[in-house]
Image 1: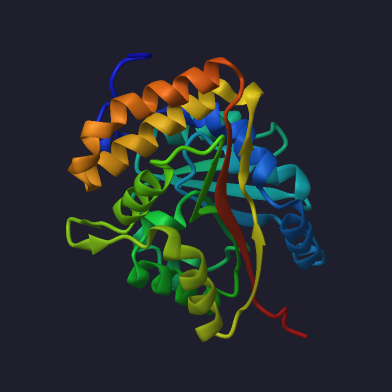
Image 2: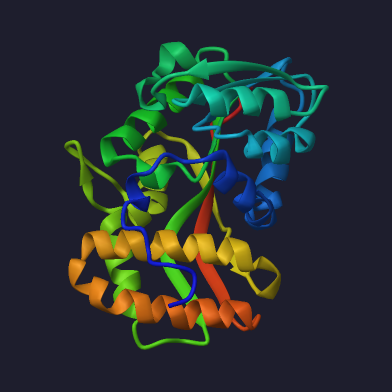
Length: 279
């Protein structure tokens, strides 16, 4: 067997800075610059500094990608449950951008706490929330009059080339895992992009969506392998019957990666919610 077994504990493991660093170039390539440009135009003429809250900031990849695309001056408030990641994020933002740490539960933010915020942003977060949490986020942003740029939410579309007969079974199990219930919270998973668009719409906020897929090829072998192991681990956790098939499947896929043959498209969606600017 190539590369060792799939670790079925992966889905519950903490997000690591190594994983976030590995995926950052793919995230940057996937995010829609058109939505960032729209947000920049919306911010033009508003008094600064522009307060931007990055929810689930991780190591700050969203700030590194977005700060230079928005007008100055900016103050980034970096929210995450992991203080070590927040410290990395604060240190890693551009030198001309002010940044402050915020450690805690991002789902607890309300309109009062968002007062004075110009933009709420997040990357790869919406699919980890529940429908109620997304509704509260939309309501809070609408009440506070702040924009929201929510990037890289999974859509459930995964295409591997060359195809394998087991692709569909693992994909379906992974999507079910994304929608699982954790501590009484039913996660939205790939239902998050349409649920978020509908939630903002209910609060009178216009929404623009754009696809932001990862398109991975021969130059992305380490990222494909780590993504693949996590994808399979989640699928097997959700559907244990797949454990009997996973090692042979992983062998085939790792061999294709080693030959530079495996291509993967992983669907994501970006969402920009813009309240009307008062006249």
